[in-house]
Image (cartoon, rainbow, N blue to C red; front, side, top):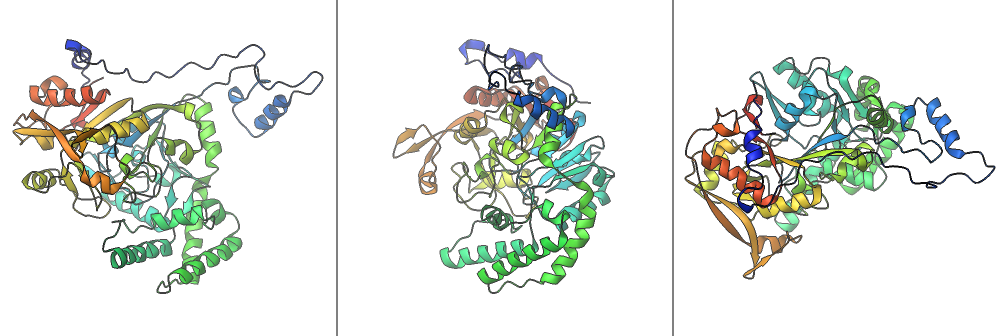
Length: 506
């Protein structure tokens, strides 16, 4: 049974002149109407908003959300709770989502594809998720895959079948999954092209990006080039879909002469998938609108990848192809920013990264090996070893600037049990001078010198701790140090793999 510990969290705020931590976000009240404000109709004109209201009512839109002549405040509706990775991924987002999904009504994915990997342990059964929202393991949850997600249909069904064999968590998943009709489809030739691109990069530049070869970059390229195909195309007119598929496949064959595509064979498989997927496909924008403005619901958004892998804000070019920061929630689900509530950043107690790219606090030594072995740091999707290093607070401050985390989940604290001293990166130096920002340029980031703070370790097994007070004092101080440096409260502390091993502080 998880116990909540409020006293310790309360005692940690504002003592001995420490900077007070910000309170968790409190949703604001609806905006009050201003006298004479709003685009009201002129004298004698028929009020257009009434016509809009009538039209929306005819479509079944919730009446409470319809503007009333521009004079009444529009209800904000339900808030969504967002869980995002704050480093380079693999922080333990699935575990936090699993906790929050226990009393959620809807769990959403808003970006990425089956390049993501989330692990959830329930009743000693380990489930691996890549494309499905991991919250679907709760039988009472409706899972929603938004328009920002790219979907490989064979991968989706294979993932569901594998997890069904492990336990009862996914029983009836087809009836609980809704897919946005605007989500783009990943085809097998996208995945093949991904592999060819990686090979070309290796041959031409001597290094590749280290992609998962799941076709994510190529399908987002098709989307940006406006040649991609969406779920709505697949489930509408299959003959028209087939013609567009042939055009796209032939474009890829022209670009990659070695690429072999069995067009007719692929179409036959896609038609079979179409029959299976059709009941799950809905207008995603309208689904989210109903969820936000209908009866009170707890809506959870499960971010994939992480802040430093974001296509815009990550360590480019060694990033993914979508926005995995908070902005991707709105664009990937079709919802307005005022409905974003709590934003929880998930932080591993040390830092890991898969593939190449700058990593200032990396430890290419015995420390890094110990972290890798103790943390079992292998990619869920690729099985590759993760590079390991000390916690980097410069990186985390940058992630906070972008995402505005209201609280943090600090995971895998137990992995640090064996260290007599623990280092934390607190600043970057360039040419001997401390720099106030996180460098965008990879060559610059590779050159930074990290300034560390050294904290005493605790040297004891903490995996059985279930409250903050049960942690050794030095482990408590490590958490307090992170809070103080970032100015963000830690809400959960992970000391093991199971649900029960997440200590909740408030």
